[in-house]
Length: 279
Image (tube, rainbow, N blue to C red; front, side, top):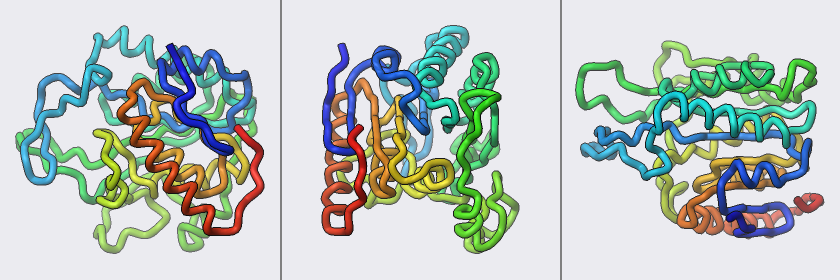
C-alpha cells in the first residue's frame, strides 16, 4: 500500500513499493531519474568501516533472491521508469560490479540508448580487509536516454566550466588524489555533515548528485529517485531549483529524508526564490 509521506511545493515523497508507485505516476512526466538500486550484497560477509570490521548486511531489502529474480526486478523497475520519463529524458544508475552489468543489459533489452559509463572514484574508500582483492574504490554510473530517438539534454558548457575549461571526462586517471582536477569524477564519500540527521548504508555524496543534476537538467525540471533512501538526490535537486519526487519503502529513511529536505527548503527561504510550478 503506497501513500504520500511528505509534500511541499517542490517535493513529493511516497512510501511504498516503487513498481506500484511508478505505475501510478503520469506517463512522460519526469525529466531525469537517478536510481541507486539495492546491490543485493547482504550475504553475511564483512567490510571495513571507520577502521573497524563490520557486517555488510544492510537489511532484507538488500538480500539477493537469485540472479534471475534480481535481474527480472531490474528489468521491471527500469521499464516502469522508462514509462514516466519524457521522450527526451535521461536516467542515471549507480552500482558496483555486482549489479551494474545486469542494469546495463536490462537497459539494452528495453531499448534505452546508453550515453556514458562514468567511473566515480572514491579517494577515501574503505580498505580491503581480506588482502585477496584489489581495493574496491569506485562505482560505475550508467547514463542513458529513454530511447534511440531521444534528444537528451546535456549542459556541455556548464560541465566544461566546472572542469576548468576542459571537456568533462568520464573516468578517473592515475594521478595524485590531492591534484585531482575537476574534469574527472573524483568525489569523496558523504561527509559527517551530510549524515548529521542520520545515515543510509548506501548514501551518496551531495557533490556527486549535484554534478549529475547540473549536467542533465535545467531549472524547473522534475527529478525522480525510485530508491530515494536519505534523499541526497532531493537535497541536490531542491538546492538547484529543480522539483523532486522520491520513493522508498522504509519509513525510517523517509523520516530522515524529510529532515534533510526541510532543512534545504528552510535554507532556500533565506535566499532569493525561484518561481517553480508544483509537482
